[in-house]
Image (cartoon, rainbow, N blue to C red; front, side):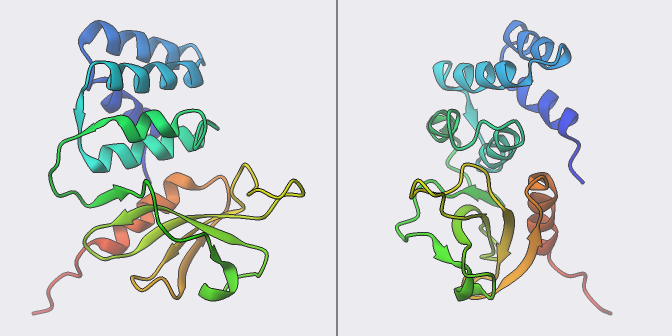
Length: 181
């Protein structure tokens, strides 16, 4: 389980002290949306270098507060990466259209949008949406789904309020198995 408060504090600590305090103060008074918007804006404006795993965590935090993919997605994608290998990678632009539920063993009304990839295992965390009456994808996901490396099977399914749990599971599934002696 990921401790969102600890993650919030760790992300704010990427900023200079005064900026970090402002971001933390916003969170402490219940203004998480404003604090998160300020955090992303400052990371981009100050060109703070972050790991790819941190970028993925920012996306999940934004999702938890209703700010992903809009309005914070573009800013999070603009955050300067460190260029190093990382366990997780935010999938910025997947050339494929959303996958349909039946292609991975799920309901036909679901459309799976790639979101966060595990670079070691090849597994993929997706956001499963339905198509709204207006013709576009629903604003909020119906589920989070982890797909196997070849993207043919859903190996884990999470409810719409479990983004952190899904990210934790993706990490857990990527840990190498202990050696048997």
